[in-house]
Length: 300
Image (cartoon, rainbow, N blue to C red; front, top):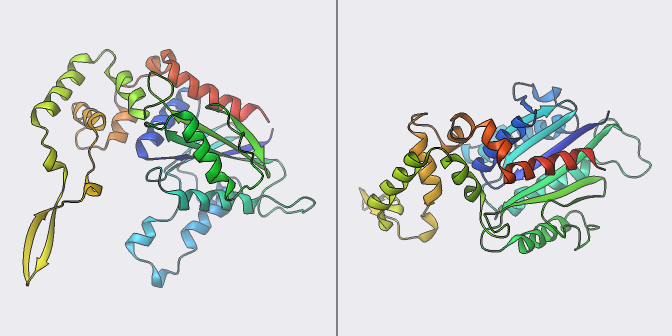
């Protein structure tokens, strides 16, 4: 059986945690203790290059954090999934870099090579985005336009519907867009919060009430320290770009504190009993994602 390598490019760590939980309900297991050279090629080489490409003498903390490595890795038989947290939908450059790395791993027709892509290995890349207010069709159009910068042969009609995929220039490419109840707009939290709130109404309703009672808009802008005339001064930012507040993410954080103190929301998604196997098995959105992955893995 051929080895399948699937890279999943997600907007942020919550997406990674959610997809990991869903895939584990479908029989995948974490394999993050695997030493990098032991991962199937070309992923072992790609990750090693990311770790070593920067001259250590020129390396600083910021550039070290920018190394494009997966946040989580999973395995089921000969299927490997590498999940990346890309830091938002605007990070086109890093996504382009990853796709280009895969493209360089695919031998040219007639070329014989064992140091890039073994003959029995298939490469895949999946883009996960929130629909937001743009809608599914607009998001899929954006994904195709982004792919076309590297994979020029992909047609504009490649993804007519959510969850479609196809193989172009030796790489299977697909996209899945998170939507809310209308199946067209929305985001991951529109799936996640109702699912976690199920059978926990009191906890989540009270968490929401706490937010509504104590929320003050101006305090979503951070305080920043600076030095002015040799004195340390403190001022609140006036840049809207410095805001980082989402009501549904905050609700998850408040509810999660009841079970896992001081942890990030990723832990509440992966570890708490707000998101159980039974809920995943009985939720259509979760099952749609599982079906997407199964079709993606099993069909050429």
